[in-house]
Length: 212
Image (cartoon, rainbow, N blue to C red; front, side):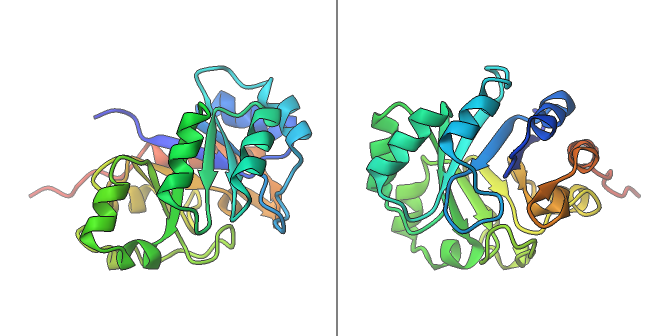
């Protein structure tokens, strides 16, 4: 089995970006949606992106913003991937693909469960992130409510993860990867380099299954 994919989101400083890269993060996310304590400008993000090796995915996170604005900001920042975290449509994802971006589409677990079989099939080719109802609030959703487990393709578990619980949740739900933001903060909106290192280590060292 390949190593668990780990995304560290909401970074704002060179120190925490460097810590995530050195600890082995697969992706680093920058928040461009308004209203978050983690939001930064595309220009600031572009300076941080230049510190990140090409084999680490760089992700711009947006929420219910005009798709042309999303594309302009993502290009200014220099990110490789756009994550949409609102009510965006599959057509928006296809527009982003056409503009040359990889994508992630975030759903709350309730919104994902509300999709009918046809809608889930339509989204099956997209990479999915399943989150709590209030993104970035550190609230863990009830993953046991997932119908038929998680999505069949690439999907990230998010919402309330931290260094203390990530290993057990990965072991229980077998996502492709995990995404964390508030769970590696010393206070709201402020990332902690040691917590980032602890989280990545814990995510990739899950408990063994009981035997006997």
